[in-house]
Image 1: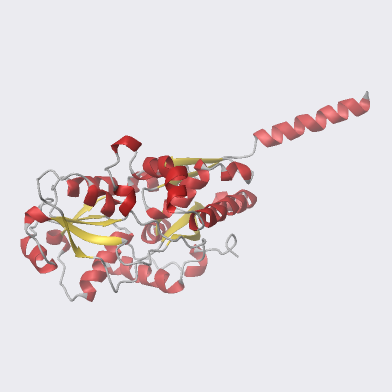
Image 2: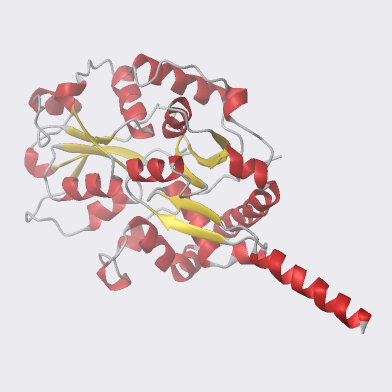
Length: 335
């Protein structure tokens, strides 16, 4: 009888402990660096590795940052610039790894519609106007994209007046939509939006996207994975399991054929990049032209990239603080 009672008690405790295992809540922006995590979730890899992950899609950078600050999510994929600005604004986060480092030319582009008759960056800057969202380069604010376009213009020896040449947005999907509708002169967009808009039927017959620059020669910044520091401190084993599933997803992506990935991952990809878009609504032939990149295994952010971002956010006066690489990053989960 005592043995039965003890066995029942142990089973009860085990069930309570299993049910009390915290959920890892992570938010994914609609960027390439989020794809392995979205697919890991869709393929059941987190469950396989014993971690309860809730994936929350938010296309608005500001909303995602506020959710992390408020503790409504535990971690997210974000720009390196966003991570630095979150930390300097008082949110105690830690960069646990890189998410995606664009390495091939064409993964980011400065684009315009052909009917604007803008054929060069010179043409574009001669037509931008102060205070006009239409007559501007649409970019996501305080982001890797803003950093990258600044570095491109500096590399090409253009003087930029942000009040005249840029319009600032928080939502990448919104930027893509406004460019496709011709509601802005130009925009800086990453894949898969470049391919999507290029294949989407134009509002004006015979028009097409013009690539003003593919950022050749620019060291593009990586996206990163960040967690609230208190979550990492309280649940290191949970984060470790998360990364085991994450790495498995990267390896599966890199070792799968295009056909397999499209078949197995189309729904997760569509819900990530184009919420609400069904398979039937995808422009015909888009998957034939879309390049599935090689994903790097999550690793540490380079100290050079980190320093460059610190210098940039201070030069832009987005912050006056100078956090160190050591206090903002950890290699605990990528060793």
